[in-house]
Length: 191
Image 1 (cartoon, rainbow, N blue to C red):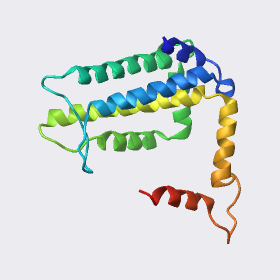
Image 2 (image 1 turned 60 degrees about the horizontal axis):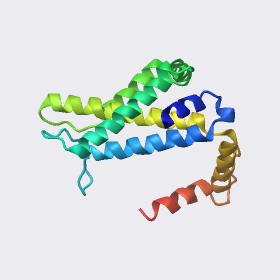
Image 3 (image 1 turned 45 degrees about the vertical axis):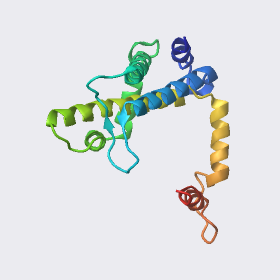
Image 4 (image 1 turned 120 degrees about the horizontal axis):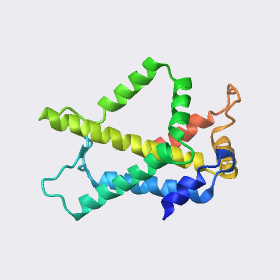
């Protein structure tokens, strides 16, 4: 029920985005992330996480896969089949921002770093492909949320960030405290 509203709501330019569409895309991104975590095997230690491919999947695993499939359909519709096909818009933006070799290098690093080498090799390749697709799905969902963000909310967010980190286009003043460095230190300290 929320999917058509989200897709229709983001048809407007980001200048006057739709709050319901923005909240819908954010909710879909959070649900998708929760579903991705539901199919990920991760222990209490710092190590590579693996996508679980159980021999006898239970209801929880199938529920997570269903959520991810629905998220995929909604995002693909918004990118390729909606009234405003964003795939060409995104492709044009990427072509302006990155040279082809930069895009390939970035994609290669992101693709290869999605899983550690494991045996058997076909399981490793499958895990890299699945985890890369899930990462791209999450990224696309958050980009769609950002495009649907109302301009007034974006202006308020910009003002808060400038208050916290300082003006974005201002040169740093020597001798004073670096607000960005102090903010990063404040968030890093408890960790």
